[in-house]
Amino acid sequence: MDGGGKGEKKKVMVVIDESDSSYYALMWVLNNLKESIRSSSLVLFATQPPPRRGFAFAAPFGLARLYFQGVAEPEVFKPAQEQSKKIRLGILKKAEGICASRGVKVETLTEAGDPKVTICNAAHKNNVDLLVLGHESHGILKRAFLGSLSDHCLNNVKCPVLVVKGPE
Image (cartoon, rainbow, N blue to C red; front, side, top):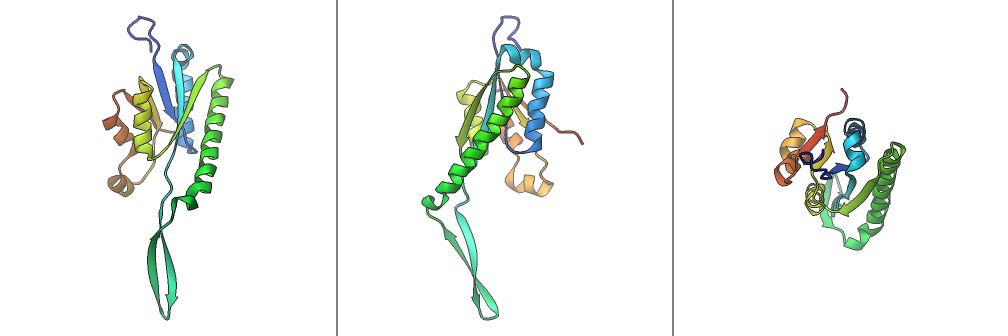
């Protein structure tokens, strides 16, 4: 992965979450790009999705139920966000340990927000040369309505995107 023999170091960013597919992607990078990443920069990135602010509850009303929709205040989500951040940092620490056991030094980054946006922003801000994602195994309907993270990244980052599909 050096730039045309010029000795230029390339930066690889692997997106890590609690899924098996992200760890499979990390292991794929460590096994298949091992010589390149030892002499270049490996970035592990974890995103912290924003809390869902809307909620619904039902109130009994005779034989029928009334359903109400509401929006919670941001303070309600603060403990959950802090717990989520601790989990993300733990996930990064675990991935960092895997890399260290193979003699690979890493830089870890985390950012709160919509994963599609934060991953693309991190790739741009950190001048990433290769973005690596684990394959998402969502059903066709979910992909059609919500879109795919990998599709979004393919269309919104300037660097190549490698989507690593796990074993069948």
